[in-house]
Length: 205
Image (cartoon, rainbow, N blue to C red; front, side, top):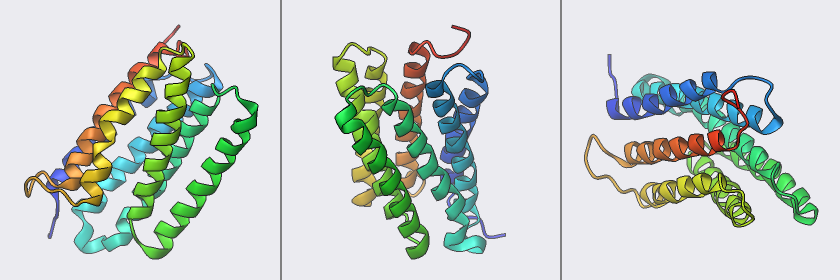
């Protein structure tokens, strides 16, 4: 068999294992926000599971083997944005942010699937995490939502991955732009997890 990018499989599945652990850790029925984050981690786990396989079996599946992970990535970002918006009390801008989340997710995912380019999924992730888990979470943190500092910190750690990907920075054959981005994503998701626990939405609190 011709197998490619073994490190992409490893780094994707590290994220998959962590996200699956968080998914089974968050109990059902706590609140709207906890359920959105629960499904956020579910689709992130699903996406990285298939993402690892898409990289490994690229010789056989081609670009279509990566489509399941792209779809899950956009869905998970949409769910994270929805969860953060539940804390946003400014009605004048709440409708705009909610509508923008729907439109940009739909348009960019559709573009990615029709054209066959990951860059649209990357743009969607950048917009979602910077605007919702970054800017809005930062504003909420300033308004004494202390748990939001973990969301902001996660986005700051993830931010370099945008430049790593777009500038095609590859440190080593076994640590290319995808591998680096996956490791930064894992660190971001760990910080998100800490923020969720601080929200007192789950884990028996």
